[in-house]
Image (cartoon, rainbow, N blue to C red; front, side, top):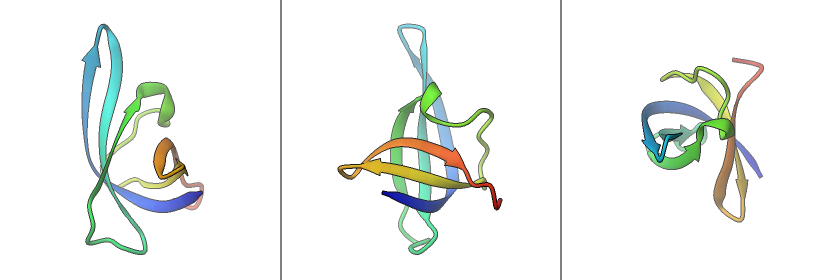
Length: 72
């Protein structure tokens, strides 16, 4: 499943030298609900920024990847 969303905030962190990002976002169809995903750096596009319009990819209700929307 893929859902269009907006990035609201990010917190990068490292574990044993590997970079991860805690991403806060809201689905376009429910902008009042802030959601959170913890992803490895390779599961999100290069140079993500707050207010980027993205597509959140889910598998069994778990975020597997965030990609930047081409219409953004």
